[in-house]
Length: 256
Image (cartoon, rainbow, N blue to C red; front, top):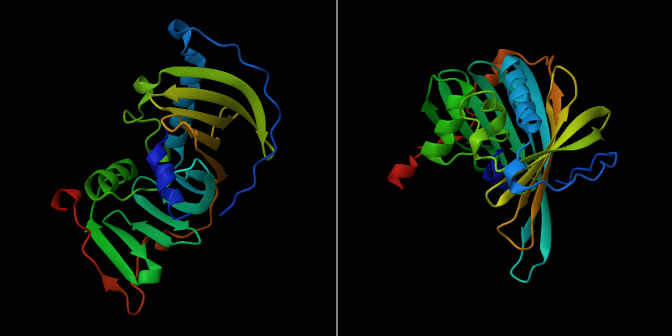
């Protein structure tokens, strides 16, 4: 499943993204519990993950819009954007922007740095693993959430396919000019939908997450834009502290 808390965490930065025009999908008949998982839908996730793992140098951007539910049930919508430059196996730069905050993450294969420009502060930790390992370490050890973290987990054993309780093919839609296969999944208290480009190079283009643990059913909607021939240089992965910036220790969750 795509990390719901990562999507919601990005929203705490909270920018409105336009909804892409989509064709209406035909109604999908209800399935019994015994046949709730469509093998083709699970295979589509595996194929997407396998293709993502073949990408060595790319740029992906996302616009995310989500809802916060007030005590009286009223919904407030917030949004954010993120851009990630990647050179596998171990270089990354991510920038998350919203009207509330800007945060950057740099990884050059030796050091991982989290910077908050508005506060003129940054934290650095030594690390030499691949990007999937980096994502897990930052979240598990330091509580730092990487936007679009699942891009580095799909196609690996860390992708939690065994926890999916329901999977269906919901037809096809256009996301911008890309024809996509639309899949819907249920997992615990979360429903999620994903739109994956058709053909032999499947990429995620849209993700919708619905929180069923809240009777108001708040949703997050995320669009992805891909550049598979980026022009950035590897120097973008190196962090240089700006003048006047202060280094701050990145404390482990175990020490808090």
